[in-house]
Amino acid sequence: MKLTAKQRKSWRRYIAALRRQYPACYPVTVRTVRTPKNICGDTGHANRRIVIRISNRLTYVERVDCLVHEWAHALDRYWQRPEEHWHDEQWGMWYSKCYCCISKASDELKREREQR
Ligand SMILES: [Zn+2]
Picture 1 (tube, rainbow, N blue to C red):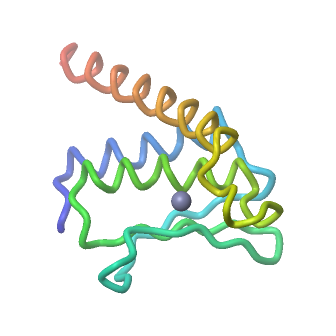
Picture 2: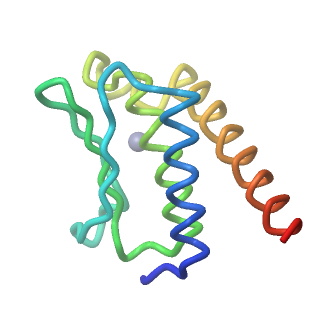
């Protein structure tokens, strides 16, 4: 799905907010790509870099949700943890922090748009 200009601006702002407030141990690149049908997104880690891939089939809201989910995996260093713990309470704690970060960035954007 194609995003509107307004959605693209918010998307960039959310990624910048996460980078600023919750940097991972390695630089994180976020890519919107074509993925297999059953995959919304994933996080990969190699050569001291983290790459988050988000499916371009998702709606804007789904993409934001997926970004929060995957950023939490990056912060939780999923590659150092057994797969059965990838979505445990520790990951959930990161997820909630990322969610609040994006929620705040969204409120800021709303205020800016109202001022214009
Ligand atoms: Zn996951």
